[in-house]
Structure formats: structure tokens, C-alpha cells
Amino acid sequence: MLRRRFARLVLRAVRWKVVGEVPERGVLVGAPHTSNWDWVLTMLLAWSYGITIRLLVKEELFVGPLGWLLRRTGAVELDRKNPGRTIKELLAESESDDPWLIGLAAEGTRSRGTHWKSGFYRIAQQTGLSITLAFIDAPSRTVGWGPTFHPTGDVVADMDVVRAFYADKTGIRPENFTPPVLREEGRTEG
Image (cartoon, rainbow, N blue to C red):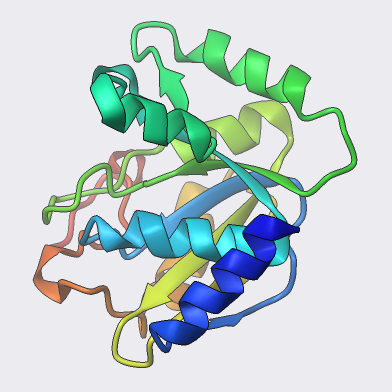
């Protein structure tokens, strides 16, 4: 309750609005991921809706004060040599009825790249969880929840849904946006 009030107060103070409906339990993809502020805005979005995001973050970042802050905001150390163990632990944790999402930055970095990382898609397929798209749109100062869908196994068709949704979203640093293309599609954009 305190987090919810805090988040709404901060978002109102910085003149960002939130939109969308509370997503189902599932895998969260946040984009465009072009700035460190994306993480702050996404956490405020989640807190304002009373949702827990278990953000997967490479374990190398969990040092010193940053590690403490990441853990306090729900981040989870991802052992990239054994990601399956981390996912299994998170799935066991998600047995409650509270809104809960595994969060990933599919772009993988705040810099422009050639493709997105496909972990969000594989996790959703392997666990049966849905994919929820979240967004930041800097020109309209809006952060929110987009559509939720179950992957069909047709990677190109599913990514067409993702591309259509993010087509009109602009990050804080638009030049850093990586177009939503997976290597598994056999093509690159950029």
C-alpha cells in the first residue's frame, strides 16, 4: 500500500501518466529500453498497480549498494550459465494469487543492437506463461501495460504482434532503440 501511494505520488510529480489494465501472471517484456530511467519508470508503474516484478538481471550487477537496491526492488540474480534453475525457483515462488511477472529487458542493453534476446519468448513457451508487453513513450510521458498474449510457436507471427505494438512507442533516447527482431526469425533490422 505504501509503495502504491509513493509510486503514484512520484509519477504525478514528474508528470508521467500510467495506462493499461493489470496484466496476468506471466513474462513481462519492457521496451523501448534506452535509458536507466526505464527501470525506474517500470518499477513505479508496477508499484502503482500493486504488481511484483521479478526482474532478471545479470548476477555481475549485484555488488555493493547497487546489489542491495536491486534486491530490494525485486530483481533476481540470473546465473547465465544455468538460467533454468533461476526460472524454476521463480515459478515455485509464484504460486500465490498476487499479480506477479518475470521481467526481462528483451533488448538486452540500453544501446542500439541488431536484435532482441529471445529469453522472454522461450520462457513463455516452456512454462505456458503469457507474455505481457509494457512500454515507455517519452514524447507523451506515458508508461503502461500493453497487450498480453500466449506465444503460438510461430515466432514471426508472434513478433509481428510485438512489432506492431511498439511501432509508435519512443524511448527516452530513441537512437538507442533496438528493433524487435529475434535471431530465430532469420533476419535483422537496423
